[in-house]
Image (cartoon, rainbow, N blue to C red):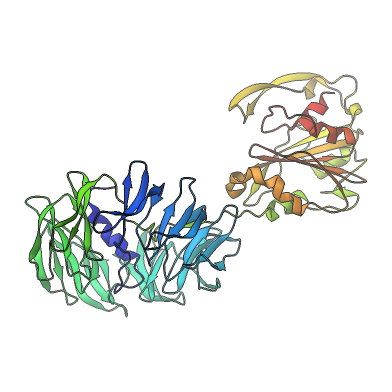
Length: 557
């Protein structure tokens, strides 16, 4: 963690549900002892013994914890585990709800008892916490806003949209060659046009904006209430706004008039304690001032937080301690690690649910009782070539020049065709080519038919074709689960055999289907005789990305 804790205070305010309500609690403070995290009270006594892989600050009377197996749950202020650690991902509570994700499941929102209040649709891949009754989600890479019923309120056709606060959300849009900032209301309509070079969310009724390299302030109607005149600014808190003139920071009121003249190297924000952290220009240390600018706690710390629940976490000689508003230590600086964030609102949760519908719709498309993908028993090379114009004697065992089949889950790398034994007149001729082996990560010699030295019989019948698909995105992450998940999607009217955990073989009256998961590939093998399917039952050898043994090995027989 950075030594200057106060740099996080502005970020933390950004996640507030309301500028009048403090975002998190220091009633119990997460600290690390040895290899594990626990919680101390204001007197430095362990209220929750060190036992967690990670522990976060309390928000809405719940704290997120991660157990030694890496799963997330929540404790209450008594240190009781009130929501079991069963989640792969989770964020802190906001407006009474926390977004969570269980292994292989969709995004859910739970209440403080751990009850599932809302389950998002499977196409919602990313979600954040609720602010002003709305939460940002992502669908196919595009942001949308949902309400607490999960209904999409509006889409966000902007370059970026931020969380709502005080009824508005900041947006960023590309205007000509520049990025400009503006605001939308809770219906998704632009309320304040994106004309600013920089901006902040609304706090206490105002937001800062940047015009011609200077900062000023607008109200929620878009009216400029303080003309751009400051070098830099931060947020409004407790009626005071941090502003920078030259190299020094001070504070102004909402009318833009100075309440505390610029005199500090850095500043934090005022909390309900009435105190604000400031960095002295002479000593380069942090102390605290009141709203009149009087130094109430002398500069002496390397880093501080603001005061929450009457205490501040401080850093001195690279050790963390806890002080009260009088500046006296309640907990001596003895801890080497401290966690200020309650796993805040800048983090997203990502769905762990994977639907094989997209994959199965490709694998089992264009099926009838007698044909699949327009291929059927008894087709000759000439007939197959009419369906695949790029097919030739040179590439039948490695065809790549075709219109790509793909969706978000996978794309087609290559086709491999196998024709009857009489496809070549006499013994076929072979040659060695270098092919990339994805398993070993090296180029290896592979034996292939030498088309130039082989005489072909174009009336030979098609025995099999292999479609080799490269998995991508979530499908690649879930490669090991795809075969298992396909069980519910297998077509009817086939006899199903599962020779190993990575393979399905479907026997039909006119053709057979083999589905094999291998590393990050799915091989779809369509066979018109049983020996081809028998090849799929043999122990898998190391293969390249291109040739599946059912086609490549049988071709050499």
